[in-house]
Length: 287
Ligand code: ARG
Image (cartoon, rainbow, N blue to C red; front, top):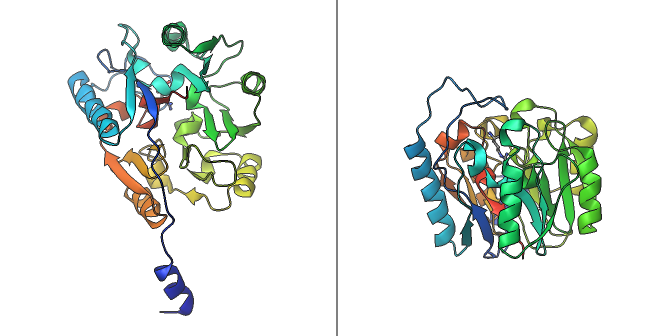
């Protein structure tokens, strides 16, 4: 063993602290793949709604066992993608910036989520521009990372900066399989300031300019493999210590463990047929 290796091997793991969070979820009672708005979706491929519900239930119970609070929005018939609540809005400090979906198939979800926010005590901001909520808008430390290229518009990035009075960093997504920012970036440390906030990401999902921004801002980020990304391994939820990830993303799991996080694998293979994973089924409610 070289001296460098022994230093690495004996380095103490970082202290990670879990923070109980509140999430909005939607039971996939009407889940199916009946249209194609991303490369994962194949309407001729059969889906199993009962299996989707069972997998979703495991995710729900995992969150509850970690001490998180889960709130539920009623699933609506004819909106099979409503299970992906991350797209329903973006919520900070009790203000919910509503979603305005790109494709007609999902557009009715926008008002449905806004009604829920309103009925549950949030100040609702009706969006003027196309945006798919926390699917493309991620709070990392004090900064909002905002994806564009496939769904959310850069006009909405400007709108979000005004609504929340925070720095918004636009990032260009270039691979249609990673069409939402939350399929290419995982936020590892909610509730920390900019200095301590870290992420994991798939470098090739971004154009050169955006990759350079990420390298500069997050020099210690975890770079996740194509293999783990291709099963939406990055589409995960962290409370600062426990990180709920796709159970097949074993490389990412090892990387998280090395950094002192506690990865917890779940199987959402049925929901992957719609192009979503753990994070897609979870919207953080910051009151
Ligand atoms: N079928 C959905 C769509 O294409 C999947 C959404 C996944 N959500 C996410 N936050 N990445 O819109």
